[in-house]
Length: 194
Length: 174
Image (cartoon, rainbow over all chains, first blue to last red; front, side, top):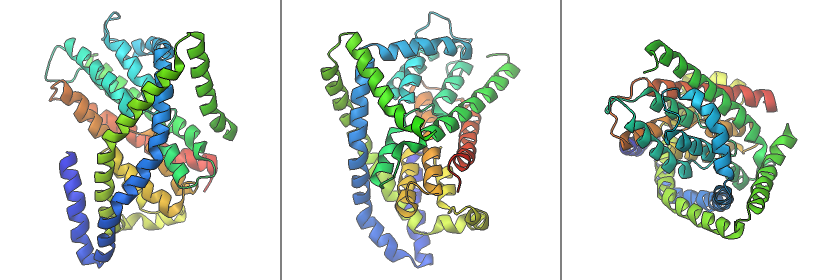
């Protein structure tokens, strides 16, 4: 998927620029784009590092667990097919809690473990269960409270107030999650919760 | 509203530190452990960022995006937007690093505090790479039939993108 996408970006870009007379710009881009990537990395690296550090404190002190437990209450309503004692709910809660902190890549291992648990209680092993799909929606509609990367990129380009988009992000992400979960709920109800 | 945005981070940091103290854990060494993990994560995503910025910058400087979205230009212009915002919306569910590369270009050209910059920030922050998560999560447990998962995931993304435009307009104006 990414493989084809990446290759075709470059192919289409270079071929189109032949017709467009912009080959000199492409030439520059080939030389300078990695420097753009390095600058971007230099800017987002410190903030990601500090943030993972703070999150580690939250994890070790049990704060993350506490939030996960609080979330578990709501999650149980979203996942009626998961038995209450199942480990999957706790893993899903941790995944969502870390995602909220804007650390998508830290959250992924928890998400994958949760999928494994969900697969154990899935009756048809090659087909997605409704609980898996609900989890995916929760994950992809991106419940993010602190968009770490975006804030650091805004700083890189001298934003007057880099964090001003926190509120708009929270509102948009909430609407997206609600919309996704509602559609999921209606499809599930039509299918009889399977 | 602006003050809420400013105090969110300090309040979260404060809560984490106070809770850590109250549980009497070694917050300093926890922090260091976390930072080390964070640096490892950065090292892992750095190659992806180089790859995607390389490809996206070649694609976007070829002018093909302007060419494809030319029909939408008059409407976009009315709100001082450019076609970059459409290509970002298009790439967001497919690749996080690709949309990050476009976001970078938008900040460079229009500035992070412009209408474009704010919308792009909000789109990036409120949606996720549905295709990637779907492939990774379902692939990891060997699921081939994903049923209505993609449909619901993309619907959530679409709502996220549309509400980004509306919310930024309501909060900051043009």
